Length: 393
Image 1 (cartoon, one colour):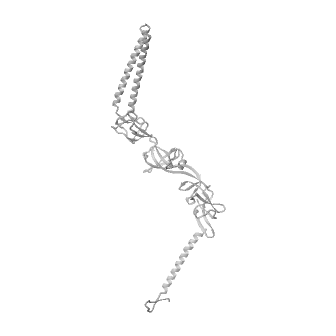
Image 2: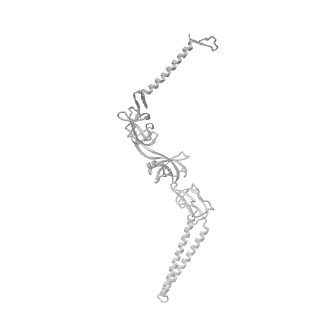
């Protein structure tokens, strides 16, 4: 039996306390079990850390032994280049229409924004009551000039008949001929004046220069307009639209005229097919971006001035594809670790390209046939000897 003796501070005799042997034994067994459990955990950790068998190990350093690393040989594959961009929708050919004549008071506007108009269709009618009277006056003057010309011609014809009889001198004939010619010239002047007046009247009405979708109407009946009134109507020629996509310098260099694109306007779930019809010849000095103009056919969901996203296909390339875990970078740039024929780790600088769901394309630095460390390259040092284990790419 076990005993514990306590001594009181006041000097009295100590009291002996008897402890149950079963309780003491239970405590001892509990400590043993805890120590055994800790040992088992440490054994499992050591097994998974240093075991070389079983399935692949990303990186298994072992004291005094060669570490095991996972390597891949990706080969080469065809990668379709994709560029994502944003931009603003606009009319591909926007035609501003204003008053080109002497103007006047608008008496009617038979069209409204959103309507389709045809070439030559009247968009606004200008009051022409004064101009009509002026035209009538010009027409009357023309008739007077023609009458004078006919009279001058008749006088000349009679005089020519009298010359042979000696009643009219040669000088009289010359005078009558000049009078006739002047009368004919006045007829031509009157005709030109009447034509000018008629042309001015034709310009009073504001007409559509081409067929298309009317985007803006900035005039109302009763308004006075003239050549200085600015843009009164705006027309999208043929209803054609475009997306002004903003691209970085590198992306703009990759795409070409004719490259297909999918455009999705904001607020809609629909995408529209278009293609690049023009690339910006200059780069913005502030944003370092250029504009790719993507032509689009008319659709009700395409609103000029609206925001849209686009996915542009920039062609295909043939290159190795690596997982993100295999690519590392530092101050010198992107690189991978390659295991050479002597199973030593070699650093290889690379240049990355397109990022896809399958991985990252490597356009420079490797051929795809090398043994490339797939993961845990950050734990390796160049020149270190390793044991490569091939894994599926």
